[in-house]
Image 1 (cartoon, rainbow, N blue to C red):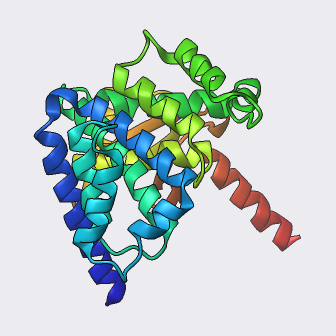
Image 2: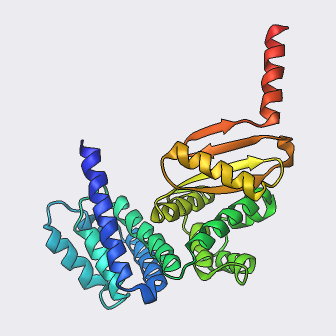
Image 3: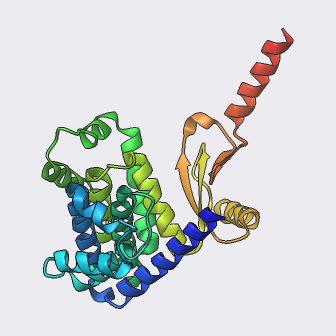
Length: 274
């Protein structure tokens, strides 16, 4: 029950953040960048985080405290978002900074939505993740913790700038340079999950041996939507080694109908029989 109340409170806070950013939609990306900056500030100042999560202080006091610190430093809408966060109860100081960071991601996704580019951002972030997964040298360069942050940003821009919309570029920069809580892959997946939530749909990844025809894709999307009870964002990964069939990753479920998996299963049955 406690978790249900906490989840409900987080949903209400997120709705409040969406409202704040929507009122500043002409500069939503700037609000996102400001929230990333504040999150970094909170991470570097443990005493501030503790003060903002001290349940012995009234919510109004916590809000007044953070407004006094950042009001002259960042966008007014970002200040309102952080102030709203400061009024909430958090299980620990780190949870607050993580929430501010997540709302920075949300602001960039809202910027994409306001500009009619949310589908494009979802697709581009997915493709970037596939490129990184398939290029060992690139992945190593992006995961180099000794590299200066600005060098990593430059590398990301070299890879995607001019090939991706601005929101994708900024979110990929964030995913590469801010990995305090998650791996790069997990960061990218989390961004896509937040994007899908904005469109009230779930994400599925289909691994196939050859590209799907439009009819096959539509049929698979329809079947998955029926299974999910709502809209589904389908990402497709072509893996010739699968020979045929399809493997679908859907939330925490994997449905493997590939020829390769059936051959492997047959081999296991033969091995047991022998």
